[in-house]
Length: 547
Ligand code: ADP
Image (cartoon, rainbow, N blue to C red; front, side):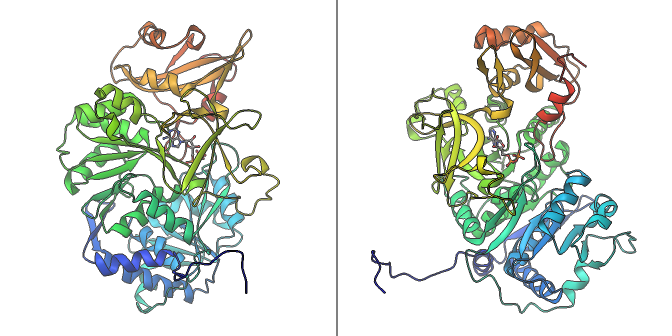
């Protein structure tokens, strides 16, 4: 057949997830995967064990009648069983649907029924969250429990036990994922912007994302690393780290439910973790913990942080006080999720530390395979000049082109006609490509016709030594329509007065940006993935009075 181009003469090697595990089993079979167990001790096994058990899991799923394209859900912390599900489910051509354990019952019911999950694998420590909704789940045939103590009784119907099932099958299993275009994973956005929407990853997109984040100039992982994903496996595939670590054969440390700052600090020290990844709230807590009780963190070389903006002050604190490099990344569930990483270039060598932290606090450079652009309200592309601020749009090899089982017309607003995804973030891009998020569209504050960036105010507030956490939201105002409200948690046992913060902000921002109102609080609400929940805050302060 004649075509209008000369086809390449290369093999069609499918970029499927099983290849990653095969590779690890050949090259890194003795590297270790550790999981912190409920009693605080560590379970440990090797990639060879992961490989064998993932193959057994393939057989189990087949015996349960799971077919190509079926959705099989997980409800678990980060642990070795969850890792097996990450490989075993896609390996048998089904779709690994990671359920967010922190969602409300209603959201879980909606998501499970929407995805039509056939089976749910449940960490028994989370039974109390799933039992009350079991009778509302229309398509679930079996609940498969792991980490269940002997004699556990449960109200769940059709329960099977993971270890029993694995021990009743062999390790002889042929991977069934033979086409890279097949779907392999499903993750619903955590819903800070409305009803959760499903993002359906393909083997190819996840494989390429794994390559992307494994570039040395991206997360910079090596086989010699000991990596601890604190970011949950139920959230945006733990930022792709389970696949990235397996591809490189790093040791992995899974913290499971031990996410309190003291526990994380102990784990990092004891397991000699070299790279850990999580949202800013986690690292803020860790820093406070280390200040009050120092640990030996000499092996920890970098903290990967994303999910919301990492305050510059916290980057400085880690790099200056603790000599730990911070790698600030930005992404979205719709982007598998990594889109940008902030790394310095050789031209920055001559900058002061402060200049370097300014750059690291930006969201950074697009990862090859992803492209960024910013658009004005009229849909015209804006220049990369570091000043122009517009809607951030992306496209690339691991970016969603539509939502799962949603009428594309309903979500027409999320995707442009010329093939870009509208992120809902507002950003500028410097001439040399550093992207800086000013806000999410819905979090921007419009005061007397002027846009005020809540992120920039929060960053500045977080730079005050007496501030532990800060959030800025819009509150209604008769004259200006909206004004910023600063909500602040001070460092423990310290009295912090408004004038100290006013003074700090007045040095940095135009008068119109300065909040007149401050709320000093003990707690700031967080979303299911640990981000500041501005939806709740806006509701709490909706008539502008301080509660
Ligand atoms: P949800 O939309 O439910 O919060 P995601 O985890 O997909 O779920 O969130 C993606 C959003 O998180 C981005 O659009 C952006 O607003 C925010 N985000 C992620 N990383 C960063 C970062 N490094 N800096 C600022 N915002 C970030």
